[in-house]
Length: 344
Image (cartoon, rainbow, N blue to C red):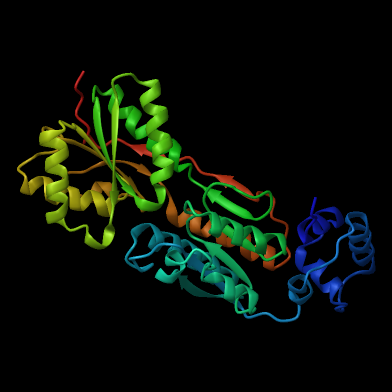
């Protein structure tokens, strides 16, 4: 087993930054801590990497915020925007750091041997810590994150925990998406249509398999969104096909922005909610679904809180404070606003 700077820090009862200072023979570390760190290094036969040695040599005062999504900026994505509000709140509260936004580029997805865009920022010491606003189904991304986590770089991510170290906050996406389909079934709906983000498609395939196995007669159809071309007119054609031809009676939207477009498309098709078609969505800012007309029943996923929580964890690590809850699960709340018709 390969032991990391995290293991040394845990055994010695100190932060990874303190371990790094001892590795670099920096002043200001109590002798008792120095002895504990050296004992832990000997116990694990730990030999620091070049990155580990360089960790304490310089700081940038910057925390990187990485988005893996293409075809959208961080400021045009409602979910990411709410995350950024929370991250910024935590950063401003600390007074020690500033943010640098790191959007992924198309070349990364075009070539199989590419590294995520945050890689150079980390390896060139341009940032002191990293926050990933969402994990996607991408083995290269997880391997790259695992690499820098194991080297002791402070990383926090919003998504399901995939590594024993690191910091994460997770709203249990597959659980609340399953619950939306289940609520439709309990209301008598047998054919449900979900507009799904491309990066969540594999997860939704698992949700589809699980819900259809449990509830005989329920059909959950998935349609992958291409946000760059998702106009109201394009959505009209999609919805008309699934509602009028496939006889779907319920729609699931992964965000309030998608729900707003769906409402506009349905109005142009002369279909009313919930009389002609039911609609449920996910809202990332409290009350988003209530501001739509008609109001839409939603699962509230507190993206701002999640952003603030993960930023505080990363900041605490950088400030050598103990992070008691390294992994946190959040349970979204269902807000019934009457947009689902009861068919039974």
